[in-house]
Image (cartoon, rainbow, N blue to C red; front, side):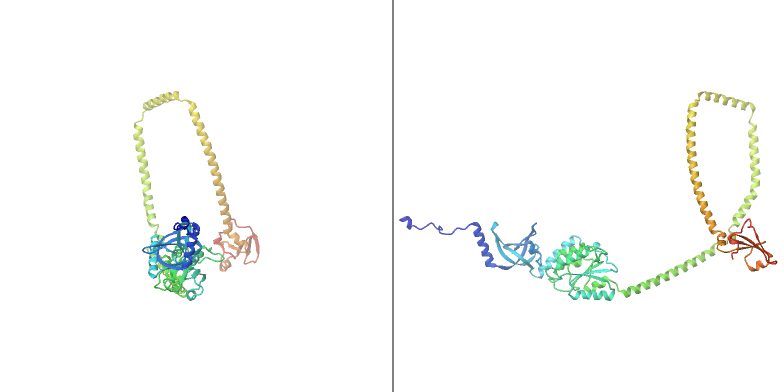
Length: 497
């Protein structure tokens, strides 16, 4: 009985839970108690998994809160968390029982104050500058007169109207508009896609590729312009093969795209002015340059003509060019005969002196010595090497003869072709061809007659036609046909009628 009345063991009646049950209860308690909350803190460690999910920490000076943004939620974030950035995150608090941890599922991130935005902007600016994206040498020159201009902006704002109006006033051009959101969460992604899309167009295609891109937006706060401070927009601008003008905000507004772009315009209207010249000013300048070119060419021709006249005065007269050589020829001709006579006399004296040293016995001894030498050498000679050398030389001579014959034949063929061409040219240029067209040459005893006055002085004339000659007597009025002259006059000596 005492056992039945004793108190039970402490905690013996407490219900038991499984691990999964207690984890689920904790999760339901957290989600039911807090629901959707906003938390302010500094972004700590940031990690993006291969699956695309984003894991990071929000911390203050004492505690750390683990945060998770799933892959499908990242595109909706207006600001991507970066380490050291002070933000306000919004989401639902939940627990992960597999590791006995709780975290915040974040679907919205906002920067906590303008100072944090400026710090983040300065950090990105230093990073991109260290990579060389701001270097002046990588910036492309703008085309002088682009045929097609691509504009990345909102199609419903006043910016596009200002750009089109300014282009129409200065120099009308074709404009392709790529509509994008110019603020908000989708601004950065759409602007980057627009720049990349223009670069992917095919030059001369159905939708032609623009020669220049203008990224434009009106003024606003730093939060409104923040989409153009995103890294994806800056990198898309740096990778653009098409020259790009940034016209984001007013003159005092500065974004990252302004540093990376090839040219920065203070306003969208100024971007249109940078894109094209003024048509009327260009026409006036072209006309002025054409007039200057004409004047310069005329002055140059006149100066060279005057220079030619000045130089011609310094040249000697043609008839005086041969006076000096002619005089030297006369002097040398006068000295030639005496010099020949002296040369003959000197040679005669040398012969007489040399003949005095010749004696018959000396010649006989010299001939005998040469005969003995020749006899000794002839006994040592073998005729076979000589015959072999003679045969080799004969073969070489035959080869050379064949080559010479072939070369001579080829040269004769070429000369014959040139002669045929020259003969055809002579026939073409001959006055005979002119006679074939109905003209005639008039001859008299004294030569070719070229005027009526000359013809009236002769009693008989010979008229040469293409098919023969005709003799005429002016006094008697009789005509007769005669043979062609043995040597017809040259074309430039005849008179053609």
